[in-house]
Image (cartoon, rainbow, N blue to C red; front, side, top):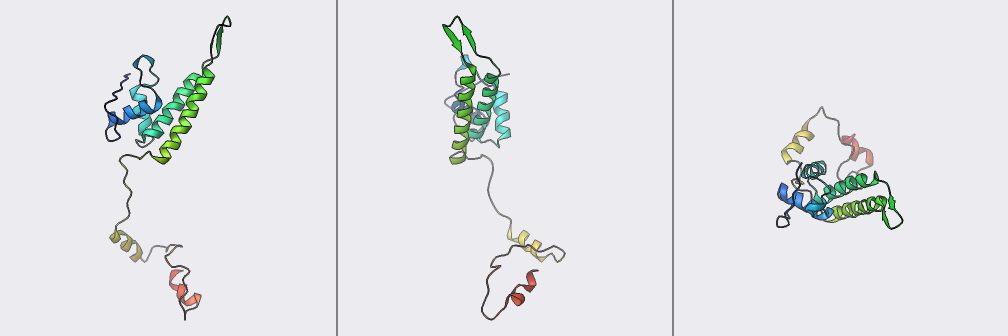
Length: 155
């Protein structure tokens, strides 16, 4: 398994750029203290539709689970390692990253759009299709029409 980080390539438009962004957000930029491998970061990006913030939160929870397995150790009262504190910090980081993802994290490669007018017209013209329960101006009541006359064609 590989580990890489390039601080000169922090972009959400390329695979390597997203990998570097996730590492930056996670704080996993020290080659001598590696937390997750490239393959794990790429998997997290795939699981979160290439959203770097959500992928970093996913990785933070993974790192937290790794540290939560370790026990607190004490050596003659002088040295103490509390991995539960480290795991808790990664959980807090994951929550913060998810909140950032909701505010500023754009999902790369997804375009919002609508259905073509031709498709809508084809669906509406299909006489064998059950009509929608929701229509524009459903409760509009023009003067001179009672409810039965106005809505009879929508039932």
